[in-house]
Amino acid sequence: MFADALGRTGALLLDRLAETGRLWSLALIAGRQTLVGPFRGTPVRVGEACRQVIRSGNQSLPLVSLIAALIGGILALQSAYQLRQLGAENLVADLVAISVTRELAPLMTAILVAGRAGSAIAAELGTMKVSEEIDALTVIGVDPISYLVVPRILGLLIAVPCLTLFADLIAVVGGLLVGVLVLDIGIGTYMADTVASLVMEDLWGGVLKAFVFGGIIGLVACQQGLSTRGGAQAVGRSTTTTVVRSIVLIIAADLFVTALLYVRNA
Amino acid sequence: MTVAAPAPRATDDLAIRVCGIHKSFGDTVVLAGVDLEVEHGETLVILGGSGSGKSTLLRCMIGLEKPDQGTVHIQGTDIFAASESRLVRLRQRLGMAFQSSALFGSMTLGQNVDLPLSEFTELPESTREIIVDIKLALVGLEGAVDRLPAQLSGGMKKRAAFARAMALDPDILFCDEPSAGLDPVTAAGLDRLLLQLKSVFGITMVVVTHELASAFAIADRLALIHKGRVLITDTPDKVRACTDPIVRQFLDREPEEIEDSHERFRQFMLDEDEPGESGDG
Picture: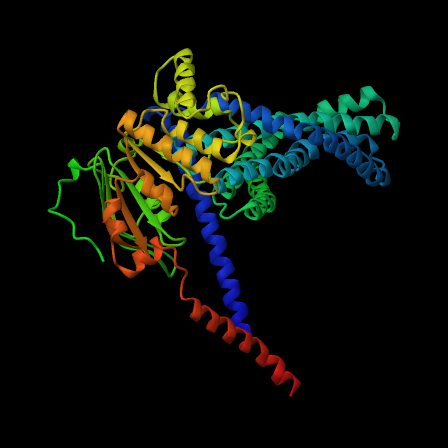
């Protein structure tokens, strides 16, 4: 019984290690194609990368806007409840602005993008894999990594930071609306507090996180899509795995990047 | 029965040379030492039943599957030892029509056929458009340039796949089950198309199929593969006259060991009954 459980745990661990290895391998190949490819006659497909930015952005923008506004409002209400007990309601705007830009906007945006754009990429590449379209590209002589993977990863590397900056703005507006309409804070005071509390490092820290998260979503989605084997069921499995694995890795990376930024600023 | 190969030929003289290919997936041996040679301009049809290893052999021949052992030379190039750039150049001289057609679902037929042209030629767009129209007309799909693969019938998809495979005027065309899943009339139309492509362009063809009528209609030589080994490679007439029992079974469409199957079924039913009986007792 114990040996069985140990064996299963070991097998699962090995499976996860192999999966991580495949992810790194894809990252290295895609990185080499992006950096070295242009000198070997396979330039980065800038047009396709731009299309991916627009596509990922369009897919996620409405949802990111809605959730950002709601989070901003919720954060204002929750912080006001706590701060009122300390007589520090004037810090609501500061708290909303800092927690949104440093933490919540990049994290929430990345999770939403993983659910919308990441799953869409995994489903698209998975369908191409099972219908032999990836093989067809290889036989034609077109490298699927430079043709499909690199533009999608680049697209997300650009789209997620842009969406995060947009989410920063919308969340602050959400907090401002709640602050002005519910908490009776003056609009001018709220805006002045927000501007005074924010430093560029908060914004850039959030953007850096979003950049890392974008890379994670792109890599996981492409790796899952390209490793799809079987039929429609396998495509569904790849899509689900992409979302779950992306979220886990995003949160793990968040801790890592936050720790790095904290150590740097300490 | 394996027909003995004549004196060895230089690899450069042949369109394709396959030497001692072994391929296994886990414990399942799919190819167990396959040797084949394809002359320039000939049509070799690889015949075999389901699971015989013929599609895996084709995937090894085109470089989509790396064999565990053995080599594949195409026009003198060892495709598993060649550099990436050499392989890309070689692939431009090859065409492949997949069993599932493998047309890019997000592109129109015109864009599908144009992809190899836009990737590997410096031709202006207007010239490429003319070539795309010519290639589609070649397979009887003139006027379908703006249609998406999802809007086509199975036969039209296969034809479109041939048009894309022919985009760069390849020297060698590989076809995986070109007539599988098609009605006899459409299948015969595809056979005629392959014969026309060969007579007009003199292309070397490797066709994998299990359809006997198609195989005998288009082949210069046939290779019958069974359990990962080539049983016979010869002209259609000689294959038809072959007396090897496995070859005969395949050509005469004889089912496998019916009595054994009945016995296995009877045994299976008995085994199923046993736990219930013991449970009752």
